[in-house]
Picture 1: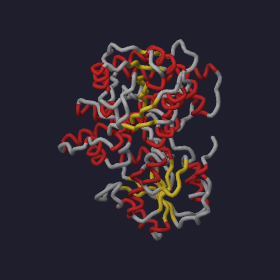
Picture 2: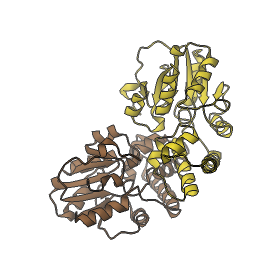
Picture 3: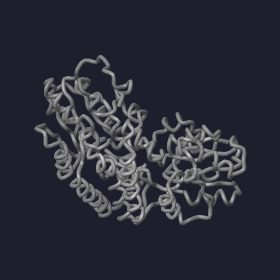
Picture 4: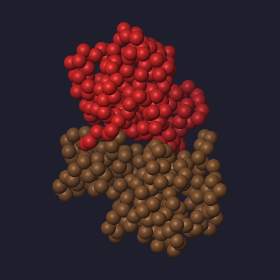
Length: 225
Length: 225
């Protein structure tokens, strides 16, 4: 498929280090997340929730997604049932097969070959993270996770932790993500943000979240990131 | 949930008649279509296809979706297996429950109450159309379908047929849809296009397709359409 005009190298200097979102960026999961959250909402609340609203919140931690989709904060027991309903469905579907996004594995090789330090940063829980990494063939790459952190996207604590792990100045780190939330978190941590379209978000939403470039997928990031 | 600024009435005169897209506009199906097409591609081609690319083609007739997603025209037997794989999965999931979009039933009542002639126009096949209408409670409303027509969206023949059924001048008919393809077809038939966000398409894509207004969902169309 032809590259979009936006996928041309920009002539910007290579970053000192790269921080990679996992869920939706390196693994093609966004639409599965929408449907599994939708099923959990329908089951727990006994009423449907608009799926486009769920899509708009994919990439947020569970509690924030729930609050934003519903416009209210349900009691903790309900939140737990919703999160469990989503997680169990997601993991069951993951068993049947998750797929890397186009070029995800090549991008990891490319960064290795070029000696660009990089880490994967994710707010996913342990089991989901393991399923996502397995979909990539469990590459030997550092993963910064949100388990021991207070926030999660768009809280920038994951980004700060990952940036610290990279031992590079934040302003010279480029973050690759697929959701506007990635952009907000990256910018809050002082990182530059490059977006891929794999999350199904519109270019305007990604640019409003601070994307310096919008590319189709990791295949388009080879030699650019 | 608060309405967006775009959902304010525009002061435009009421249309003489209204043509309503069904799949994705009155019934919340777009994300189910993405996942069921995705499963069909993975099974038939034995390789994954990017789900965001499928999303971008939802609303097109099957053969056009396949051609556009793959960037090539597979042989007829493969196309048939893909379409059947999608249809069977979609219908199986529909049995478990499809849901109207927010306000869809109220919008039909509102148009009835105000005496605004309206038809549902769809390019869906017979079984899918029946599942979609059942999700709405099988309302007593005329449905123009694409079964006997050569094209399908973005071919505007469904629109022309629906417009003829409405016995109104095309320029005074407003078409409600959720996908850019709806807009292209509407404009090609000389109808004005109002978009809802239920398809998960970005506002910019809907406006580029000619949307005069972009509203959240049918609930926002009450008294506006």
